Structures are given as C-alpha cells and as structure tokens.
Figure (cartoon, rainbow, N blue to C red):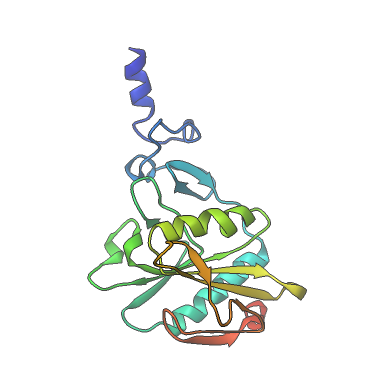
Length: 204
C-alpha cells in the first residue's frame, strides 16, 4: 500500500510535491502542467526556481531579443524564455534562443527541440551567476548547441557580451578567439550578422 502511495505521489508534479522529485527525476510529462506562482525550469530532473529579474536584466534581455529578431535571416527564428527540450529531464528556459526552423513547426510544440538551437543567451543577474557562468554553459554545450552568449553587467551598467563557441573536439564552450568580449558595440557573424551599440539596450 505504501509503495502504491509513493508511485501515485510522483505521477505528476504538484504545488505540494514539486521539490521532492522521484529517484529518476521529474520528466516533462510529469511537470508540464505544474501550476505554481513562480517561473521555473527543469534541470537534471529537478525543478529549479527562476528568480525575479531586475529592471536591468529584463531590459537588456528584451532589447537584445529585439535586435536579434530584427537581424535574423532564414531559416532562423528567435524566441525569449522559451522552453527548450534537450531530453526528458532537461528542459531549461534560456533568456534567448536562436533556432533553425527547417522541418519543424515550433508553433505546435510545447518546447523548442534542443537539436534545433544554434545560439543560447543568458543575461546574468546577482541570483544567477553560478547558473549562467558554469551550469548552463555545460548543459548547453552537452546538448550540442553551437554558440553561447553570456551577458554581464559592466562598468556604468553597460552590457558586455561574452561570446563562446562549442569546440567539437572537447565538447565544451571556448571563447571567440579574436574578440571574446564585446564592449561598446556588439559585432557578430554567427548565427547571422548582427551589429549594434550595446549601450542602446538601456535607452528608455
């Protein structure tokens, strides 16, 4: 009887049990209907609470998304805070993703397939430093994402973009060799050409 109760407890995540994943971790089918008063993502089968973003974080994310969305070329699409599924236990929500739409109707899917993503972007906040600098890059590189941008808050609040590419031999992200950190102006060629003044992200 106790075993049956335990099995039933982990049929799906609820507001009462989400912090107690089963031994094998939560799966997307078990968590996708979870109704809780905070944003979250699924990492290694655990529900990870996403902190409330500051004005700086949200402004930089939104404006960077606008610039990427405006510059994108076929076959790419750009989304912000979109569920991105790497496997059944890992469905993070990057601040921004650029993905290849070829052969995929993302409008009918709960999640963007991780195999389609070519660029993941995270805007660092005080509560997400460890995730965005270490855990998320390892997760994204392990999923085969080719490019990663980490946006840091620089001097006088100016955004700085740290650009990484996935090294095929090691399977980890390495800095862009010629200009690993963009300050003042961002000028990138992949996944498509985009150039703009980083300080403009904070214009109000």
